Length: 151
Image 1 (cartoon, rainbow, N blue to C red):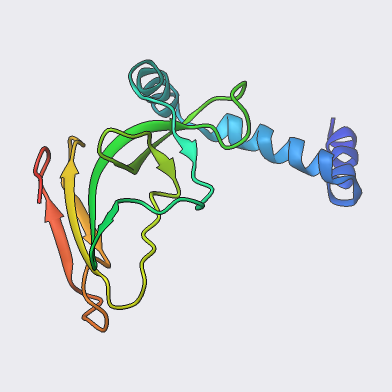
Image 2: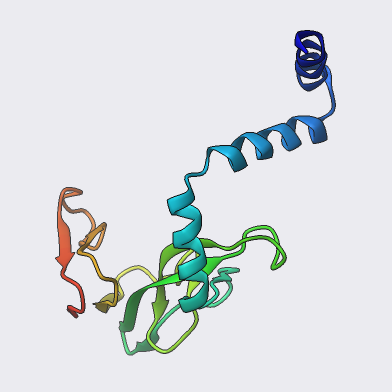
């Protein structure tokens, strides 16, 4: 048995990338707690699919020199590899009434544009946002949103 384990370990160290990937996947599969797997199944039944954002289309609507955006924080399932694999439960942003995106909706404006953002927290836990401040500004500034809160 020890000889086979040594031979297997040598194959992993010296072997192909596919062998190392397979071993990594096996280690990951056996290290995932059952609670996470049960939670993933529950989320899969109730959560929408997330879509990949190709960053070709900016979010919101530009009216004069002001960009108006309405975001929602929601839960969904992300399929980073393929639809045949298990989805990864995640929290993400979407524009109101649109699909969840990973990465979130893109904010792209000319310099000097005013940005008016409304954010709704549809999650069941408090959300803390970083980076929603003027530039230059204090990086420590945060916004906290309680569940169901909108600002």
